[in-house]
Image (cartoon, rainbow, N blue to C red; front, top):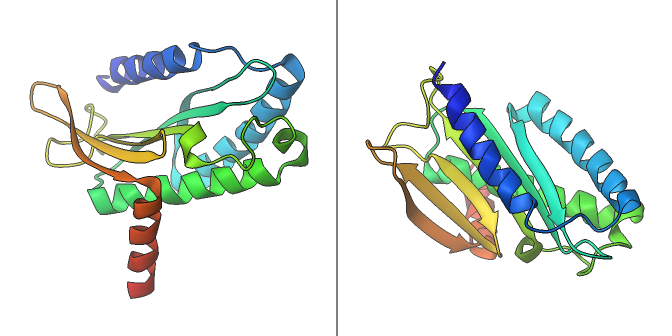
Length: 178
């Protein structure tokens, strides 16, 4: 199956990002991993998002939360925006409300500037990344939402970038039209 090497490559990227910094402490790591485990299970059941990797950064406090997922299907900028924004908002809300975690956040409330959330999209026949005319990945990084495609040769290319706030506004406008 072609999908396995791609997932392994994406997972290696996520783990490399998460391994740049160590988790703040064993106790904080356990609390954060527990909450992320709950969230990831819910997201798998509700949105077909499969976790590829997770991590965090900080010394004595949590400075950054890193989560990487994949799903199968055709996504446009609009549909991937809605998925990544809604999941990002949910994650931030849950982390900021969790009394066992929020006291360990270096920057409270945690914002999109301290979140790396990525979703990679694979084609529905599990032949690899999304078709070149569809979004291959969307991510929240440093307060921005970034969308990429894969060219026919497999090269990743950024096709659109916006602030997290702008993406939230666009999602809200789209919801009002429904």
